[in-house]
Amino acid sequence: MFNRVLVIIVIILLGWVGYIFYQKQGNPLSGDTAVGATSSKDADHTVFIDADGFHPSELNIKLGERVLWQASEQLWAWPASNLHPTHELYSEFDPGKPIGPGASWAFTFDKVGNWAYHDHLRPQLRGIVRVR
Ligand SMILES: [Cu+2]
Image (cartoon, rainbow, N blue to C red; front, side, top):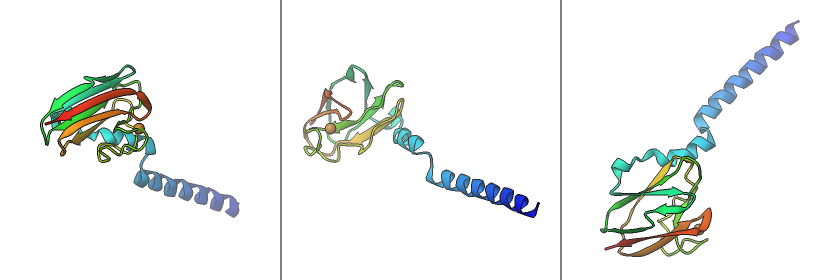
């Protein structure tokens, strides 16, 4: 009888510890969508991403302006600087992980240039940001 109570207490304790641990670590999937904590109000330009690609795919902006990429509710996306897969032309222009469905990622361009980019998950989808 005593052993049974002890086992139940241990199970409850393990569940509680696991719950606390999970809360602290966070759900890895919600962590990915947390990339989208920024809203389009915080950006100068917004590019929408759907199955067809980037809209608009060409953007002309001024130095220091901020562009937000907004993924559609249906897909994961990963806008990143060319060249695929290294993203070395403008290595900071890369969220470093995919943007979850409905989430977004914003980047401030601090270099003048023609910054061609692609969706790292579907590299045939291309876009360009021209910074002047
Ligand atoms: Cu890539």
